[in-house]
Image (cartoon, rainbow, N blue to C red; front, side, top):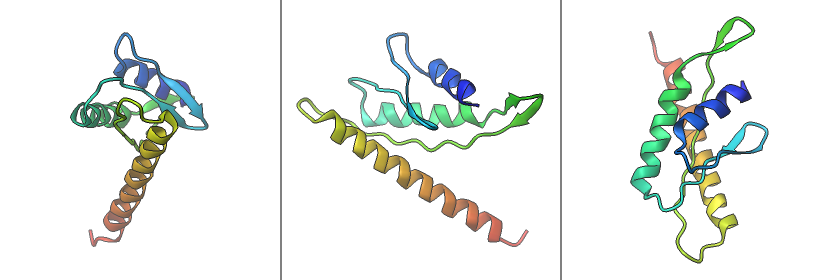
Amino acid sequence: MLVAVAGRLRELAGPDDVVARLGGDEFLLPCPGASETALADRAGRLQVLMAQPVDVAGGAVRAGVSTGTAVGRSGDDPGAVMALADRDMYRAKSSSRVRRRSRAAAPG
């Protein structure tokens, strides 16, 4: 599954972009010079890519994805920018859980 996720991130990345695995199931795709709008667009495209099932041992598996973005400015500490993106990702993950619980509780 991690190989498939990394492949989809490479598909999303530009020719000069770097895709890095931070550890576990967390990846980083730095986008130097990108605006908040461009980052949001790229995160949306990743959601679409990850919505496609992955073939794992002959079976289709779907993976959820939570993205976080942050725009750093000249002179910003890279670690601080990463921390902002990480907080944004956890906000997205928390929001996604609330939406799933709401749908599961809705009468159907």
